[in-house]
Length: 63
Image (cartoon, rainbow, N blue to C red; front, side):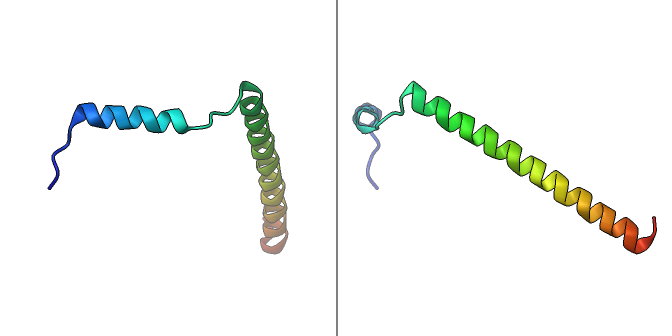
C-alpha cells in the first residue's frame, strides 16, 4: 500500500483546483434565479395537482 504524503496531496489538490473553470458572478446569479423559478413553478404545479386529487377523492368518497 502506498504511503500518503500530505504535502504532495496538497500540491496536487491546488493544481487540480487551478484547472477548474469557475462560473462568473453573472452566470451564478442567472443559474440561481432559474433554479428558484423552476422550483417555485414545480411547487405550484404540485399544489394544483394535489388540490385536484383532493377534490376528486372528496367527490368519490363523499367527504
